[in-house]
Amino acid sequence: MDWLSILNNAAGELISPTTAAYALAAIGLSVHFGYAGLLNFGQAGFMAVGAYAFAIATLSLSAPVWLAILIAIVASVLFAFILGIPTLRLRADYLAIVTIAAAEIVRYVVSTVGLTDITGGSQGLNGYNREFQSLNPLPEGTYGIGPWTYSANDWWVRLFGWGLVILATLLVWILMRSPWGRVVKGIREDEDAVRSLGKNVYSYKMQALVLGGVMGGLAGVVFILPRAVQPGNYGTALTFFIWTALLLGGAATLLGPIVGAALFWVLLSLSNGIIVGLRDIGILGFMSSTQTGQVRFILVGIGLMLLVIFRPQGIFGNKKELSFNV
Image (cartoon, rainbow, N blue to C red; front, side, top):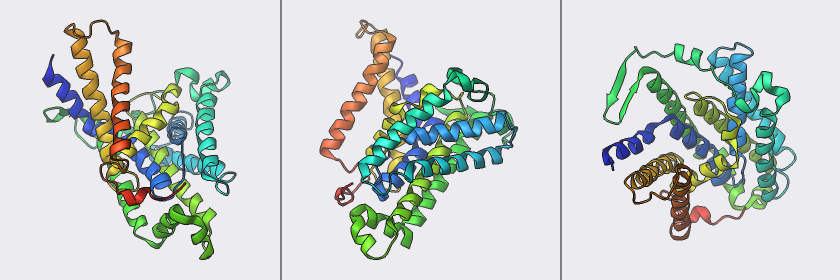
C-alpha cells in the first residue's frame, strides 16, 4: 500500500473546505443543542437553504458575492422562523420531528422538475463560484508545503471557509460569556426556572435557533464553493454526519465542533485509504468499490458507539454539560 499517499490525503482533510463547512455547521448545532438544548435534526436543511439561496442569487439575480451571502443569511433566518414559530412553545421532540421533516421537504422541493429553471432540478446548479474566484487576492500559482499544497483558488476557498469558522467561534465565545448566553444555558438546564425569573423563554429559544441556523446556512455556502449544488448532498445523512462531528469534539464546547469535524474527515479518509489499499493488494479483494465505501462508515459508526459509551461528553466535553434534560 502507498502509505504516504494515504497519510497525505488524510492530512489534507484537516483544512479542506468540506471540513470547514462541517465545522461551521457543527458550531451552529452546538448553539442549538449544546447551549440551548434544542434538538435540531435538520441542519442539512439550513445548509441546503443557504447553498441554494447563494447559488440562485448569483446565477438568476446576478447578485455580487456579498449580496448573495446576505440573501443566504436572510433565507436561513426565515427558515428558522418557519420551523421555530409552531414548535418552540412545545416539547423538544416536536422540534426534532419538524426539523428532520423540513430538511427532507427542502431537498425534494429543490429537486422537483417544475423548478428546474431555478434550482436545476436533480442535476443541481454550477458556475456560481466564478465571481467568488475573481475576488481572490492571491496571485496565480501553487502554494503550500507537503500535503497542504494547493492552487491559489483552492487556498482562497480555504481561507474564506476557515475565516468564517474563526468568526463564528469568536461570536459564540463572546455570546456565551454574556448575560444572553447565561440565560440560554439556563433554559437548557431548566426552562421553567428561567421562566419564573421573568425571562421570555420562547424568544431566547428562537434567537438561538436563528443564530445556529445562520451558521448552518453559511456552512452551506462554504460547502458548495468547491463543488456543484446537488440536492442529493442534503439528505438526512448529512445532518447525522454533523452530529457525529459535534459529539466527537463535545457539545457546548468552544473547539469541540472544529476538532470533531477535522477528526471525522481525517478518520473517513484514513479508513477509506487503508481499506482500498487492502483491496488492491488482494487481502480484501472480494469487496467492490461500493462496499469499501460503506465499510468506512461502519468503522466510523463503531468508533462513535464506543465514544458514546466510554466518553459521551466528547473529547473536550464535560460530563456536567450532559446533565440537562431535553
